[in-house]
Amino acid sequence: MYLFRYLENRSRSFLIGLSILLVIAIGVIDYLVSPDIASIFFLIPVALVSWFVSEKFGILISFACATVWFSIHQLKSEITLQNYLPYWNALIRLAFYLTVNYLLAELHNARKRESKLARTDERTGVANRKLFVELASMELKKSRRYGHPFTVTYIDLDNFKNLNDYGGYKVGDRVLQVVAHTIKNTVRETDIVARIGGDEFIIFLPGLAYEPAQIVINRVRNVLLEVMETNLWPVTFSVGAITYINCPETVDEIIEKADYLMYVIKNKGKNTTEHITEI
Image (tube, rainbow, N blue to C red; front, side, top):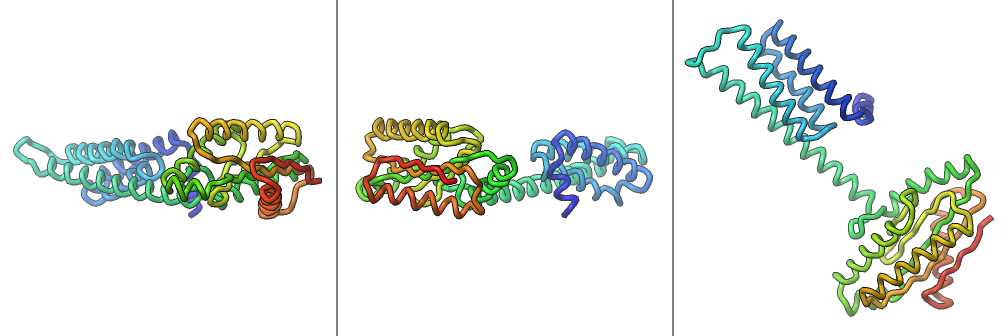
C-alpha cells in the first residue's frame, strides 16, 4: 500500500519515465535470460502506466513492450520471411498487453467515478455533505492555526416543494442544477459550495469577516433571484449566515447553527437574509 500511495503522488512525467526504464530493464533481462521466460514482466510497465497515467500512454507502452520482445527474439534467433511464428507471437503479446491496459484503465476510471459520486451530489455536481465536512474541517484547522475569521452561509429555496408539485421533478432538478451552477460561478474558487439537503445549499467562505462576507452573500442572493426571474421560476431564497471570529469545535456544530438560523428566518417570513456574528 505504501508503494501504491507513493506512485499516486508522483507526476505523470515521472511515471512515464519510470515505465520506459522498466521496459528497457526487462528487455535487458529478457536478452540475458530468455524472451519466452521473462516477457510476462512487461506487464509491470503496462500496468503502471495504465493505472496511474492513462489508457493512451498504456497503448504506447504496450506497443513498446511488444516491439522490444520481438527485437530481442530477432537478435537471438534468425527470423526469415518464411517463419511467421515470431511475428504471430509478437502480435499475441501485443494483444495481451493491450487487453490488460484496457481492463486496468476501465477499472481505474470506474473507481474514480465511484469515488467522485460518493463525494459529490449526483444531481447538481457540487460537493455533498460528506465532502463538505471534509473540506470545511481542513479550513477549520487553518482558521484555528492562523486566527482567521470565516463565514458560513445556509441557503434554502422557498416554495421549492410547490414547484416540484406543479412543475414536475424534471423542473425541480433543473432549478437545483441552475442554483448550484450560479452559486459556484458567483463565489471564489476557494469557497466551498455544497448541497446539504433536498433544497438546501451551504457555502463556506474562508477568511471572510462580516462586511466582505455580507457583500458576497448579497451578490449571490441577487444573482440567484435574477436567474429565477429570468426563467419564470417562482422561487426565492431564505439565507442564514454566521461569521465566526473564534473557531468552533466541529463542522457539524457550524451546520446545525446555520440551519437553525435559516429556519428562524423562514418562520418569520421567507425571502430574507439574516447575518450574525458568532464570537
